[in-house]
Image (cartoon, rainbow, N blue to C red; front, side):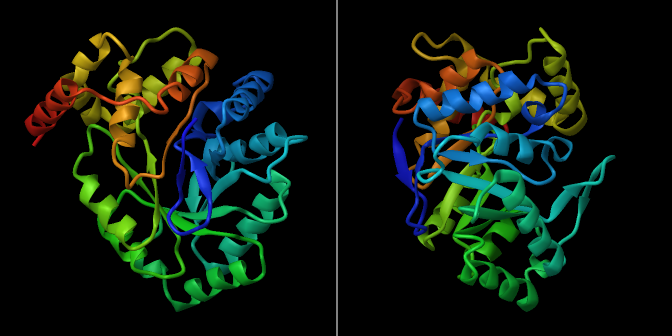
Length: 303
């Protein structure tokens, strides 16, 4: 597994991170299988694990804590998110500074950590990043509760705003073959010293295609139809990636993201061991010029 610097944080992270969210954290997904995936990721050199307080109905974060129990976390960058939470029925937002601080305390307990290597605000609005909020965040660093601060947003204007704020060290954006327009945004953030994490690097699986073999596949398919219907159609234009002779469509999608030197890591989840190992094997792979040209042609057709 290759590693890259995470901006100016002083952290080095595996260029492929493990996303601990969605079906992976659901109670319906077997605990032993979920923990086994984390252990396999660790054994294959993954050092970045990304989760959030609201993920998987609030179950993902404590499950990651259980998965890491008994394992050394000294070299790991464990990232979680605050600003959203699950109330037992749905995800709610709360960006009051006191609520963010309380979320950090809960996350430390869930993850059995003395300090969070990386805390990311989960979808903040620019207006919520006021002086009170920034002061509270700086205080978390001073108190040693948080080592690095970041934010996750799909709004380019918010990411640009965050990249200009000194208190933030990392940004996480949705970047994949369906989102080539994110590249200049990523370059600007990296140019300001921010570490950049690529979320959704497999474009929610729309590139590889959806195959319904188990309840988890139905769950992901229904989520895609509800939240990403347009991307399902856009993803069909990249079906040629499924016929590459030397890598899978998922590996090609990951290799595309990692070809951007401004990306510190691509964060991808998995609920099958074969998929996890396939993803991790992408580290160090490169796309040939002909495949890159076909990707760019397909991207042009999306405009």
